[in-house]
Image (cartoon, rainbow, N blue to C red; front, side, top):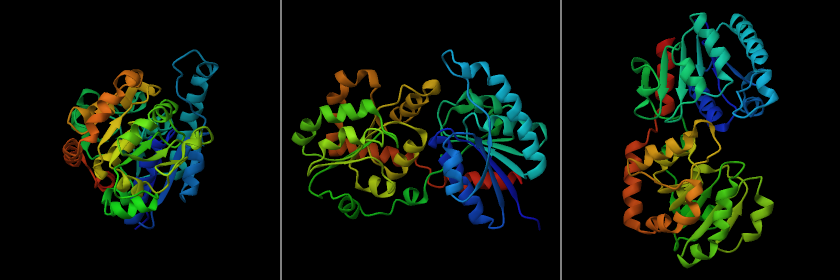
Length: 360
């Protein structure tokens, strides 16, 4: 039997790319002879990360529409037409059995053309409030994998499959010992550990918040693992001390979640799916700088189920100490952790690959 051929498209951000890589890894694990081709956007994160993960990628000259006036908007129609034409060539040459999209404008042209060619298609939506690309594609694709309830507001109900978001197996399994994890980050076991996450590049407003409250955290008996982001490490590394570990980036996220008693974080979809599996109580500060304000909607989806606390960035100065103090209560932390476990989808990647196999 000839090997299966799979095209996966998605990127622009890690939130779209890493689920795509997780799906590729699971499909390759099941079908060792499968041929997997990624389609991304030239100049974006996927063009670097996908080859490093061992997969081939083709880049399209494609871009999203800018919300403010920009020269990029003027050449958007040209980029779109050329990307659609290149997508046709890719499909004719590779002849995939299935095309999968994980969001971001990179996935638009290839998924659209695959639909016209009657090639089986699936999109995986990470957020509780979908981006415009997946909203448009949902009318043409055959199957939609989602991570949240209630998305029939945006997508055809008969296509929806609640799977959760693909996350790293080491986090989904969640079998690391917290004592060992704290030791890995040079933390003691006699104090609660506050973990601060701002994404790989960091979040300036969260970093400013942490720096302004270091004395408060010390009085509360907390020790910190502060992932400030590669952009801001030089600026904030001066705050390092015996009880405050400042680091630019964390590769060992499974260790980090296991070491955490409390987390302060942005609310990207992948991060929240990991939080559910790790069952670590968090105060979420959604980024206001993302399309469709989807981080806020993601955070509210957890908060409405008692699985997180949320503060809008604009309200941090007035609300932070009052809201954060709730997480100092062990009973409150336990209650949130139990609600997170109810939302966890550790088998998400497997469920999505099941759907792909059904399409084949």
